[in-house]
Amino acid sequence: MADSGYLKLRHRDIEQIALVCLNCARVLMQSGSSGRVVHACGETLAKALGVDLLGLRVGYTSIAITLGSGANTITRMVTLSEHGVNHRLNQAVRALVREAVNSRLPPAEITARLDALVRQTPRYPAWLVAVAVGLACAAFGELLGTDHRSFLPVFLAGGLGQCMRHQLLRINTNLYVVATATALLAAGLVGMAARLAGSNTVDLAMFAATLLLVPGISATNAQADVVDGYPTLGSARAVSVLTVMLFVSTGIWLARLLLGTAP
Image (cartoon, rainbow, N blue to C red; front, side, top):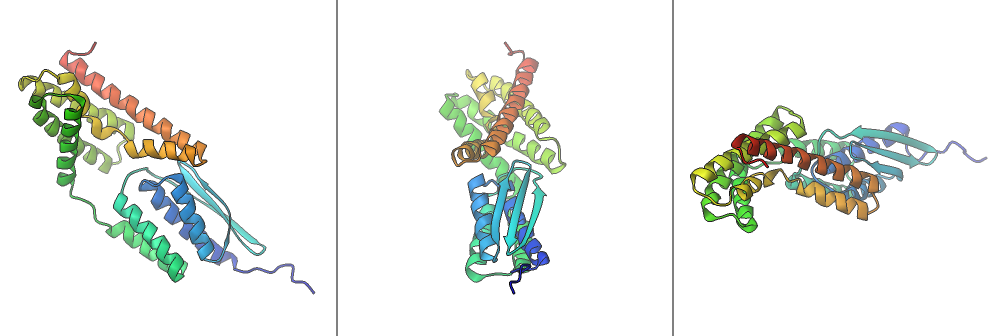
């Protein structure tokens, strides 16, 4: 007699696998991965853990997965809190997925190691990031055509703007408020300092000092997602990028208004 209720894995086992896949996908998404990478890692991990991937939806604010084993299926979803860039953590999670596939790690061990990566993956000191951002803004200013007298003002304004952005994000300030406030501070500071230094390219210097706010990774991922067949995710990312740039422009306009150079 045929066994119509045959199950390859128990419901609780499939749920553990679903949660592991979702957590890996969530960390990848929040650390700067494209939709294609998130989908590929989730699919590879699910198959390695012995289940069939029936569906994986990667969205801008949530990720949902449906897994099956025999006659048993389960659907779970996780929300995304923020979209940042952490290349070191991103690569570490990808390496963990590869190791889990090659070594057949159990779900509990994958979860424990993923949590450890999130907690222990080192970050650069805030002061070093601020210095690097200031130098990057000043270098971009040179490429845009600013004169040498504005190099130091752009460097200082960009670094201070990064410090302000870091502190505001630490207290969970709204992303768009952070963009406006940081652009206002950086553009205002460099506008005053460049004038005092006798620069003839004050307007260009104001734009250069706010280049730290340009969401380049998000813009690149938005294009990649559309090309890779994730138009909804790509469109959401593109809208987010455009909104950030709108608020950055608002901050620059406010700085120019305060300095008396607004058109």
